[in-house]
Amino acid sequence: MYVQHNGVAMGAPLAPVIADIFMAHLETTLMDQLKQSGVCEWHRYVDDTFVLLEPTTNVADVLTILNNFHASIKFTYELEKDHSLPFLDVRVIRPQNSQQFETTIYRKPTFTGLMTNWHSFVPLQYKKSSIVSMVQRALAICSTYTTLAAEFQEIRRIGVANGYPISFIDTRIGIGLNRQLAKNDSNTTILPLIGCEKKRMYVEIPFIGRPTDLLKKRFSQLSSKVRPDLDIRFYTKPPPAVQTFFQTKDPIVKHMQSDVVYSISCIDCNQTYIGKTERQSIRRLREHGAPKQSFDSRPTEQASSDEDDTATPDSTSTSLRRSSRIRNKNHITPTNTSNTTNDKKREKETEIVSSLAQHTKDTGHHIDWTGFRVAWRDDNPYRLLIKESLLIQAFKPELNRTTHSVPLIVFPDGLPRDMLPDPNG
Image (cartoon, rainbow, N blue to C red; front, side, top):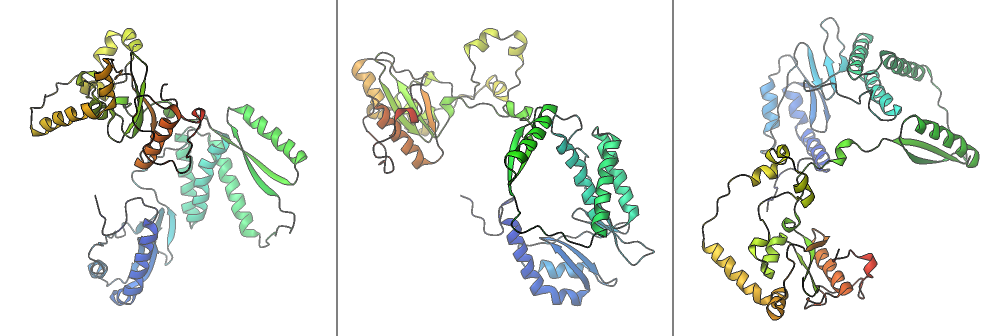
């Protein structure tokens, strides 16, 4: 078990809050000392700080004061380069012929310019937002008309690279400028009428192209007539991405799965057994008496007989899955050790305890080891016991010796079968 003594986990929701509290404590404690060392201005966002120093101040002295505050906290710094210094997404410029700072947009060197492509099958509003968000950021950050014009030109370049028409981009820029000018010229605030506020509702419509826009328009007209007291806003949502229809990882075969409730049947009399295991199913089945030859413990694909019949020489010789490449490699057979001896002893003991092994011994029947079914899954051990108990009480398997694993407090009489997964498939 890992115990974290300092800080918080990477990406944790509390990380910004804890960092803000720590930096506030640092500022309260060291601000007087920092001002004496030559700090003129100190502006901070969470743990990023923008600092102005006196020309005669030694940066190393300020860094020593900060690093001595806590043994586990070490600060780094970046000096201005070519009279400019980035801070978050803002580039602060110090002109030589002016005493005022200028600001413009800063993009990291790793910025690729990739955005929603113009030819993407998404609602038009998504494409508008891609341009409008950059325009609004430029209007909020750029401090001069020169830097604003340069940023608009950069927005045009990014948009054209992603397939956007230049007229579409210029229209978004024009609308943004007009709204900004109207906002600056307007000094009056329009207050909403008391008692006339409409309840706002949002309704999702699947996006299928231009028919969706026509449907949304008709719905808006109909809703304003039928329910004028409601402010119903319809929004469109694009279909799922193509990547959601493909698996990114190899599927885990059922005998290698863990935290499952499983069922095993007898081939000769169709009697069943329901159990649970938090380990890999193959380990539990071997404890029940399954022969080692029943399963391949190495990672394999869930290949069906249909796939074997339709496989071509090219597809069998070259496999795209990593599991198939591992399967074709040579595997080293481990030598017998004391652990394997103990495993054999444990398996021999479980053969006598397991009701499945006892059933085979008493009747001479055969258990369908490879045909076992995974009925339920849960990574919580207690919930796994509850699910096993619910299935045992509902289906009453003949080979089980117990009626439940834990007391069913919420459902003492169990649940009907139609509300539970069928362990027999």
